[in-house]
Image (cartoon, rainbow, N blue to C red):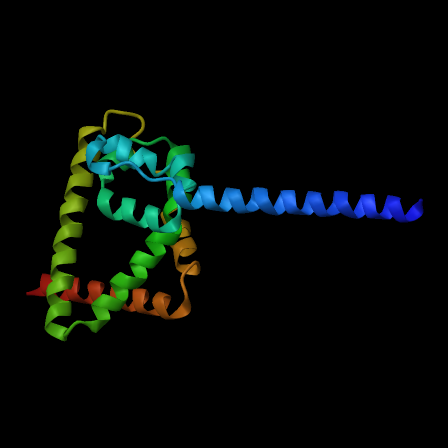
Length: 192
């Protein structure tokens, strides 16, 4: 009688184990065929394509799909400014790894350039930043009557420090050198 009870318990355990393994295998197969896809950002409006990166749907995408979407969406500073504070936080969290990888690639590409190419790049970046600075000042002047002239919350230096701490030491050193070279180049070109 005890032998029959043991045999019955073993059968139940074995059937349970096979059932769990089957369900796991089925779930793996289904997830392989039905991986979530991001929408085409070109078909979305400027604000919608940026706010999608702050969504839970974006956070649930596989890493490669996120990278593809971010590259396709491009930069959209105007739309980013229109997001709520919580959306901005979610967007930063959802794209942090991607942005870090892009920064690393960007810095490595810069240091692989010849000195002439580096200077040309620095001049272009300086001109672009000047353009952004003028546009920002124009917006501030335009909205100076408003009580919310500075929509950025938090400390920019604290944010920058957090970004730097998230980088590996080589990329961080190269990024700091790139910034130093940009300041130096700006000073040199302004003196001419």
